[in-house]
Image (cartoon, rainbow, N blue to C red; front, top):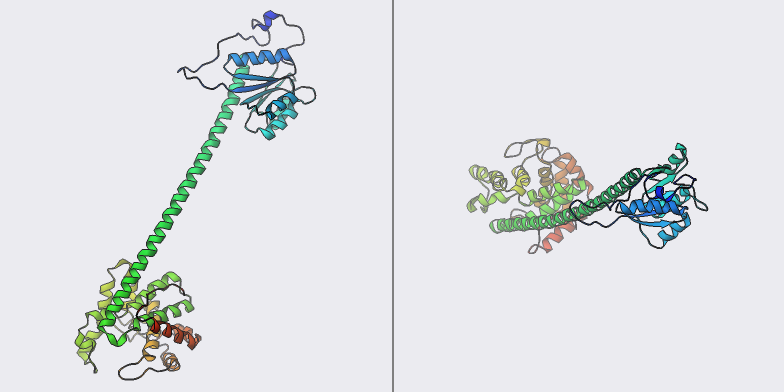
Length: 404
């Protein structure tokens, strides 16, 4: 009950005295003259005078009110599609009390705050209502300003929750949009990088072809030795990114020969000591050509050291053991395999078995023992298949480190 059981005269109900001590005033309005939609409040109470008084208070404060004479009537209004920003409900009602109404409305209308009104001055009753989802409670009797203050707090709390949810939704949408933009940008970048890398590889093939024109005796050698080096690297467990670097170094290992005079490069007989010294400069020349190109800087190190020997007797720097880049140690075995199994002016091509024996014999001296061990574990058929593939494509081979 909102008011005491004793009869109140009409003078009291008009707001002069009594529990509410309210006065009828004009509706609250925005100081800037902007008319905002009135917030709708559902007043639920089984006593008609109380429903009318509370509704009048709220209406005069600028709210739009609907009234329900019972909990069941309130549920019917809600089920019919009526929407409210707040519900004020009496606690003690027949058939469906305030707590039961609270539970059922919270399940279906979680965004609508509920303020419970009770004449029971027992804090445990109020706490029970709050535990069940009520925003707040009012104890009868109460004054107009107390009612309006509670209503404003409840509506403000709802507004903040709705704004926060809307903000979260906008934020999630923004994050999704940014994520999509980043993914698109990443995909575009990956495509651009792939195209750029492909352009690099085409450039490398052109450089290799230019070398073949200058040193026709070794036509196809760079492509075969690159393929052999890739096969060795993958078998030994080299990561794919490193394989790409090693493959470029292997493919361009003799690029420095473009700086060697044709008279020396194409001399049919043996070179004299002075000519040997000039020929050995091709490692350094190749390094100088490639080191200034960013995507070939690492490959340049392999070019620089591809004539080094595991025991330190190679050139141009006399590197030893692990001082020699792994790519160069892999290349050294691949290069020897191709040299032995290819025709030379001074001898015909030999068998893979002969190459395996020669490489095994020089393990620990010219070659890295671990690389030799890996090479000897690989079947002969692999090398024959790779050679046949390269030789059959000699005029259309596209340099690539991609897995076939």
